Image (cartoon, rainbow, N blue to C red; front, side, top):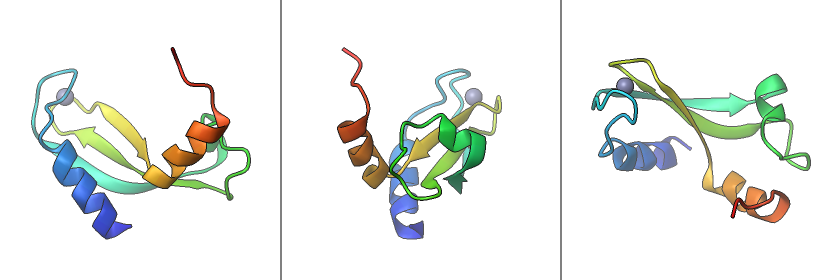
Length: 82
Ligand SMILES: [Zn+2]
């Protein structure tokens, strides 16, 4: 996970904050459990979903990301917005 997260963080770091346009971000691994997990349509997932948070150092905007594995599960279980 740390290796995967760092490669994703490198990709994300090229994109400025969608709110303030800032370029200073902090990335941290995260586990979505309890109420946070209920936001994700992942009933068949394990006790938690893994991902990471990306927080803007300028305005504090928080972005949440799940792993690609989690995204693949979503594609099978969730409804795609058209
Ligand atoms: Zn920002």
